[in-house]
Image 1 (cartoon, rainbow, N blue to C red):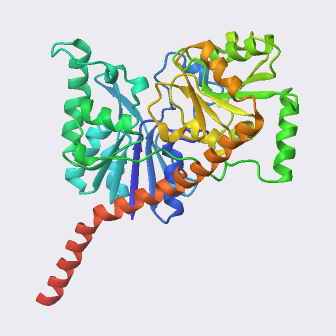
Image 2 (cartoon, helix red, strand yellow; image 1 turned 180 degrees about the horizontal axis):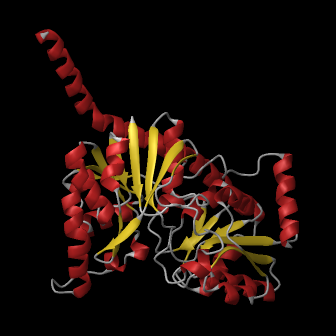
Image 3 (cartoon, rainbow, N blue to C red; image 1 turned 60 degrees about the vertical axis):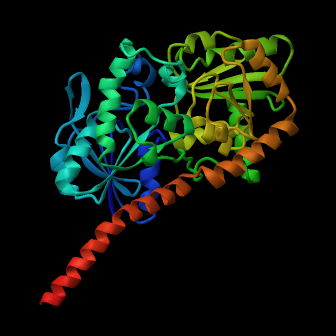
Length: 416
């Protein structure tokens, strides 16, 4: 089976679906191709160069390049803007070269999805799409009712709902990564409920797992010492963008206040962004630059609690897989990520975040939650599990086509 995953951005240093699902499908024997543009994740953000410039170097994705990476073929196409949005240049010719049986996109609207749907009618592959929009980043989902003339609703209608509905007519399945993503796909992106399936993102258990050996415990201690953490300190880690919408500053303020009260809490912030200086200025908090995904697990294992104050993050799953209890806000609509292995606090309420952190002062309680999380991530959220599930769906979609081909060959033999 030959599969082409079409995505707007790609990074060899980040563990996103584009990289991880492709790697594990290739491990299952799929002839896997990733087709992307010469753009990095978050390229559209105003602070991209200051946040990610030192991490994702320009030139890493050369337009027109083709290379083998982690068992699959990575194709980089140039991009152009059409009606203000990025679009792949040369996609039709590239798909003619690859001749995929399956094409997977990350969304069911936008130029990539619409071009994939159009080209399906030429090349005859099976089309699968997705939705990664959580309610936390799509405020319309939380509003009760919309006036027909509401400007934001009309923009969504023409930019997402109608294109999404058209693409969905040619789609086999849309994969929503959580139940709230499924709800948004149906209510706002034109996807028929009958074609929407909840399939979570995964974690790479090759990298993300608890400390298992004496050597692993030694490595944890060495890294903690290098970072300046004492053995008895409780290290709360956040990884990702230091942006106002992610608001890691709230965690830094909480750990700083706890230290002022004599509590042994520290903050470790791996990443970069607008809040970096404010976090760094608060006592007890350490800012560390972004690290490649294969190294990030070491920082989770050197920590004691994972905290993401506002929006969901893939790092939640990675930290849980490393045996950390997770703290998120009460509006996060992905209970499967934290049930039994995490706690909630009231969104942007520092006093309540402090209350929850103090609940995790007990190391035995942290260990109890961490064991549940690590087992759950390995069992239900590994990329290997997700890849096997996707592969079954892809194979099922191709069965009618393959059966028809066999019947045609059989009839040709009879006529001969």
